[in-house]
Image (cartoon, rainbow, N blue to C red):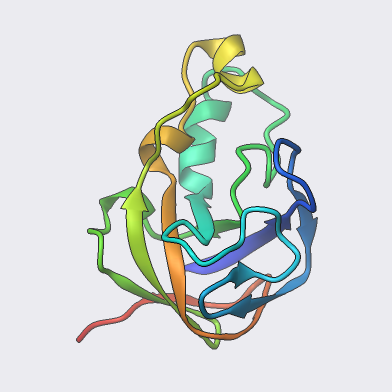
Length: 145
């Protein structure tokens, strides 16, 4: 079963995100209390633990959830293989994939250490369609129409 392994927020842009046990997801906003939230197509970022593990295998041992500035760390689905428009049930919430990867304008510390970063290629972005409270350990399901 795919699940949420970490929820991460930051009150200001340009800082590492810190783990929280629960978060409120709002339509046309994203995660309440996160600096990157807003009424745009990249309300929430997700990154799979499996992607983080690829970077750990390159010799980075201090990679904890939120280090890639992802809001939600998951396990059990290769997120970057989901096409734009895919709907995901995250606990009681519903989100829609709006973007796969992103351009990296300034290379992060991870990139500087090993010459690459996984977020620009394997991170995904979603917008909230159905609000609710999301908790660490909640199930994640690809919604089939």
